[in-house]
Length: 591
Ligand code: FES
Ligand code: MG
Image (tube, rainbow, N blue to C red):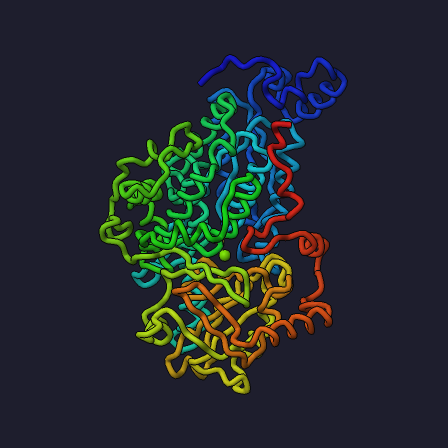
């Protein structure tokens, strides 16, 4: 670490120690002095470090950051910096209506303004609940001032009658148990609540564990940091070390663009397959890459990720939970397995000033039930397959969650083992689906494919997590649990359904789903990566013309000003659901 900074090198000095603007300096000083900071501190030339606080009573998953921030402050102070904590727009995955994804870009915008417009030299990003991680990383990317992420850590394992209960995933099972009369409503609530026994983010391999793991792989967290459970003492310790480290990063001028390179993203794509990561990861990482100006496409997810085997045995695809993941070695142990096969770009830089190779080389697996050695994976080819055709330009399918039942029913034609055809049943948004799924008039049988449209970033502002649709009651009773589902929305990372998701462009943006009709034949070929409505081209063109004539695909009215603003400028899921005009703003801290 070097301490020989010259005056003027720190951004914050333009506010607090600016000889060319003494009046403004006095004004800035008096207001920051008024809560107890001294002139000596503010003019000492010490880095001023923001703590971007995502925790609050409204954000229970991240609320523990209110405690951890105290240790972060102590680390900052010890390393010779001054901490200034400020709130980030809350994003709570399960509490925000209509969907938390709507708020990712709002929190991003707010954080960009704060990081750019206030006297900050570096920032600690407090990440955790699903969208808080991408929102914070995206803002740090746009402003490009030294930044380090601190995960809040997963909850402790949930337990019920001696079995692990995972947050998010247990709800699906509890619903089935209540429907079967095995538990009443009080038992339902008790079972669901058992999965969330402590502070922290979801303990399953949902979007939160995925994004926190990938933030570490991208190099933005201290090594080994992502998986430490929220209440553990180690979490307090890493918070202190994170505070110390950000001060050094400011002195070293180590910025997000030095760390989150294309190599780092390819590493993240590969690790995402190995951990069985969420289908929300391509949306957030593709969006983050765009804000950085890093080349990354949806096809990269298949090219680099599809062949990677599944190593981490966490619910919903597997058995274990967050505490087990930590005890088994967490992210470094997974990275080391891939590295042994030459699957990691080892030179990618990380926040501790060392490369990911140096950080993770030799990290051992402490429990092979939870993290498998790469020679004995849980499953081969655990990544995403990208599908294209006249229904959409791209959609993804998570191969690792295809159940044996699904494989037998749909993928067992020996001449065409990865293709199936079916009759389309089309729903317009989640309300339509809930209202009609059990209606016998739809004639849904095991040869049908369920379609959900009007659920993308424009159609259902932010994109609804609704593509995984259950079969109608009358089929469930016959033991047919999962029908193929396709849609322009998202799917919860805690759901294990084999759906074709994130179809782009969505119906509301003129994608092929808009002209699909119930009764159409559709062919899905996973080998060739295609998904098509089986109608002649001229009929397809006639349908598009009729749609244009009618003014396009209709979607519900805006409920809030932000919904209208975002709908007017948001990109599709394939390109990260970013605010298109924001992408051209880069490296704001560099002037
Ligand atoms: Fe916040 Fe899962 S709901 S982490
Ligand atoms: Mg989610």
